[in-house]
Image (cartoon, rainbow, N blue to C red; front, side, top):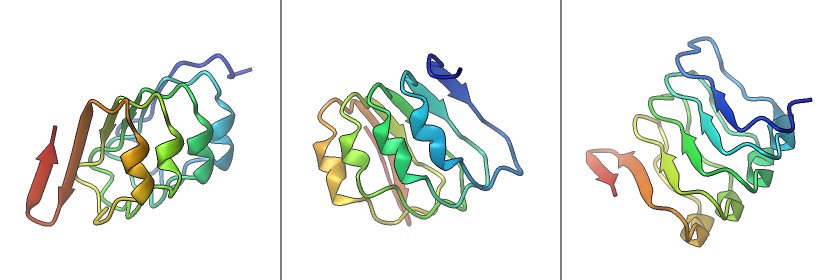
Length: 113
């Protein structure tokens, strides 16, 4: 039923701690915003979202890592993980050739391109 969903905005869901594993079934999803939530990790099924262009995780301060296969998101143009607890990025991030906007903050260093 939700297979045609293109945009999912879950911003400011302060009690949201976990995303469903079957999120990867939303095969038409192009934009996913999960800002200001308490999620702790991202299900690996997210890497099946072949049409995902924007992935916004700003200010999810409990989030410590991205899925190892995040590089399989070939259409991803925007990835923002500023304000998270992510300190290291998976190696596969270098495979995101379509990435145009990337926000990342590690310790006292901020990168936003």
